[in-house]
Image (tube, rainbow, N blue to C red; front, top):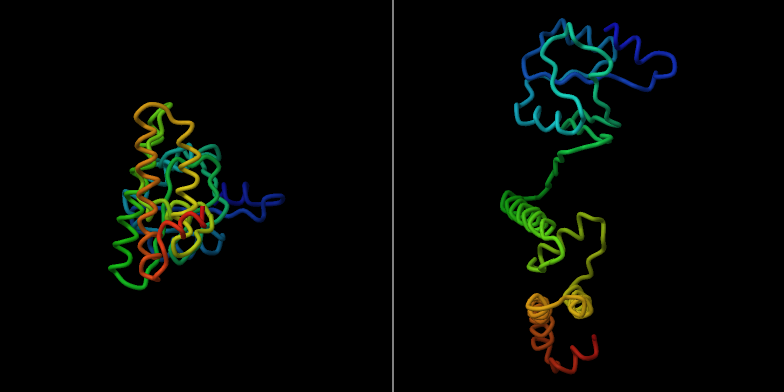
Length: 209
């Protein structure tokens, strides 16, 4: 309470404390914390506590006697419904919230997101050789997460094919064949759509390019 009054007074009136605890908090303590404007969360899961300690430089506190201002972490926002803690200065962990209308859709999004992270992590470890082996769905999801606009129908595959064709010139040795094969495989979808609509495949692809 003394730290709250000292740190959240005068010039720091817009600040507030958030206490996250793995154990329970009794009603009397809740009332006292609420009166002082402190948000308290009880029975937090162990894995969530580990993630929180990774998002800021300090760790979890076990003894209140050693508690000082220097041990506090910083966050810009914390919502009450799902308790989103955002705005860390130097985060080393992240939580991604997936929303979907059905359980099947959520499982699909979860699998795609997991594969995306694994592929990106694998590719970033390669120094000097970047191997493109992401499927179009994964690339689209990554672009969506980065705030990019993904065109509909076969426009994405055609544009990606053009980009990879230019990128192939920068790649040497056998990796160039891999890029070329991946670029050509992207044209399967545009060719199928063209054939289903009754147009000539080669002429349509040439016009798009």
